[in-house]
Image (cartoon, rainbow, N blue to C red; front, side):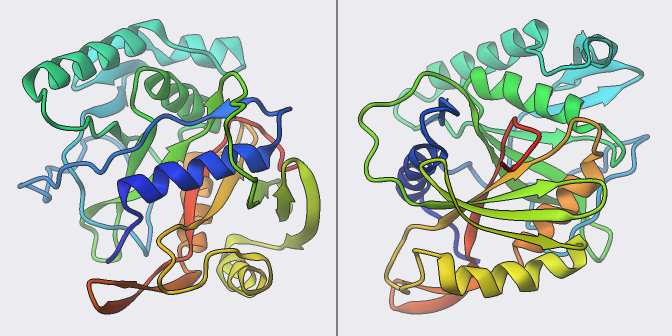
Length: 290
């Protein structure tokens, strides 16, 4: 399957930040493509139930963030306590995780001075992990230089796979952003999903969907009217940001992200035309789409 190239993902995320508007004051970190693992059949993570996804892809080599017995683990080593996040009841940076991730990044850069840092972390988390915890962990490693996540999921055949999400984290506004493009926000609520198209903070279109099962078809329909990257020679991708309340579980986040990947387009590369997901998906830190 064809994916956004490092340059196209970075460029489209710059457009995404402009579309979010100055009030969000969000920024992304430069994105590069991770290195495929020579052992994609990684041993299953013990003692957790992974989310399931239809559109998962082979795992890539990346440092692992996980939870065990209330502890936050980075590459299997305890670096924090998840109960601190739960007790705070709000998003927070976990300093132990930040320090471990930053040190990992620096070691990688010293060992590979001639290569771009992938900036990808693998999150192996239970399906019932709250969005509060998920977003706190993701935001922390994003600030440490890992703005791209692969969430470990179970594919239709039960094998471990990944579903990719990028991070949108708070930061200063960027005065050099180009003309903003439309961005799709998908808000998760207890009773429905909200589809909101925006440009530079201005709401252009709003619709409701009853469930993630109906989301893919509706987004495909709306993308044909609202999307800006449909030409097969266009290497950029339309952007979607998930807005998830902190009490929503990871399983619901993955279900929505998986449904979004059913919306597809064609792209031409190396004289080949292939069907690919129409959107690059990011996990926002906000709880509402508008």
